[in-house]
Length: 601
Image 1 (cartoon, rainbow, N blue to C red):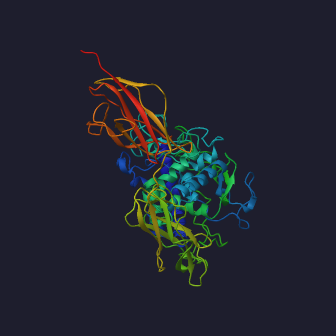
Image 2 (image 1 turned 90 degrees about the vertical axis):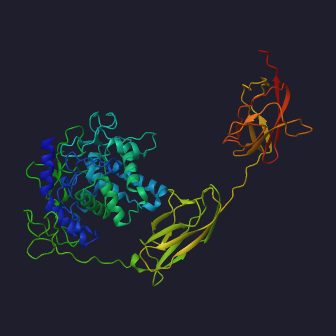
C-alpha cells in the first residue's frame, strides 16, 4: 500500500500547477468561485486514521481518486489533434470527451429518473459523468457486461488508516471481499455502509448492485440530490460534491470535468474509453490498482504510458472563450505567486509567465439576467381530491423587458398554507429552470389527506419580477360504496359458550360486480331480522380497550374489497344469534351464529 500511496502523492504534486492554472481559466469563464479554492494536498483534510463522524461519512470514505484533468484545448481546431482510430469523427472529435456507451446510458437514465422523482434537484448527467471519470475512469473505460455490471470488481484501497480513512468492516466482506476493513466498491466507489443506505436498482432487475453502473449511477444521483439540494445553485452543487469526498482538490477536479463534459461529449464503444493515468483508485480491480497503460497523450489523444515522469502533458490551457490561441503552461511547475502554488491561486495572465490572459465571458442575448416578468400559463386555480395527484401543475413563463422568453432562468415554487400537500419528492419547495420557450412547470403536486385551500407561489430567483400565485384546493374524497356484500365460504359458524368462534368470518363488498376497496362496514349483533335492534347478550367483539361490544363501526374493506372480522367471542348464553353487516351504499348481509352449551366442568 505504501508505494501506491507514494505514487498517488507524487502524481498530485506534479499536477498541482496544471490544476491551479486550469482552475484559474475556469474561474474567468463559467466556474465562479474557483479562485478561492485550496489546491493543497487532500491528505491535510483526510489524514490517516481519522475516519469521519458516522453521520458525515463521504460516499467513498476518503478513498483515492484520479487527479487527471481534462484538456482545455478542444482538439477540433486546425493542427490541434490527429485522426484517432476507433473514435467517431476523427480530428473533429474531442477524444477524451468520449464516454463508453453503457456508462453514458446509465448516467442519462439516472438523470431522467431523478427528473421524475426529484425534479427540483436539477441533476445534470454530466455531473455523474464527471464523478464517474474521477472515481473509476468511467468504469475502467467501460469494462462492463451487457447489463452494465463491471467485468471484474472495481475496488478502492483498503480503508485501514494507512494513508486513508480508518473504516472497519460493515458488510462482512460481501461487497469488497474484506471482512476486516471496508473498501470503496464499484464504478461510483461506494463504501459498503453508504451503499446500504443509498443503494438503488437502476436497471430494473430487482437487485441493488454497486458494481452495476446503472444501479451505482442512480444511487449517486439520489445522494447528490439529498437534503433538498438544487444542483443548479453553486453552493448546493459544491456541498453535494464535497459530501461525496470531502476534499477541496476533489471538488475542483470533479468541477473541471463537469465543465468539460458540458461543452460536448460523444458515445464510444464499451471497453474503449480512456482510463486516467493515475489509476490508483477504482480503475484496477482487486488490490492491484496498477496503471492501466492507457494515458492521455499530447494533443488530447490517447497514448502508451511510458512510465517516464508523472506530469499530464495533455492539459494545454486555452483562453476561457476557446480562442484558437493555444498557449501552453511552462514545462516546470510555477512558483511564488504564479498559478500552481497550493493555497495561492495567483493571478492568471501575468506577462511573460506563459499563462493565458482570460477574457470576460460574453453574455448570450437571452439570459436569466433579462427576466423582468413572470406570467401564468394555463389555469391559476387547481383542485383535486385527498390522497391523489393534481392533474395539472402550476406553470409560468419568464420574459425579458422586450417580452421575449428567457431560457435558463431559475423559478422557485413554494407551497404556502396549512396543508400536507407536497411536490413530487415530498418537498414543500422546488426550483426548476425555464425551457427554451421561457416556461417553467412545477413538479407534480401530491395531495395529502388534509382538505382545504392553499397557495403555490412562483418566484424568479434573484430577479425583480413580481411573484405569481396559484390557488390549490384539496377536496374530501368520496366515500366508496357497495351495493352487495357476500360471505366468502359457507361453513356453518358454531361455538360453545364461554369460548370463541374458531373460524374466521370474511366478506367481500362489490358495486355492479366490481370489488370495492375502502368501503366502510358496520357489524352489529341484532335481536332478529324483523326487529333489528342491537342485542345485549350472546356473541360479542372486543374493542381496542378489550371491553366487550356488540357493534363495530370502524371497519373497512381492503384493496381486494375483502373484510375479515375480528374474533367473535361468546358469553354464557346458548342459542342462535344474528350478525348484521351494513356497508356504505346500502348493502346488507345477515349471518347466523350458533352457540351451544359447553359441558359442565
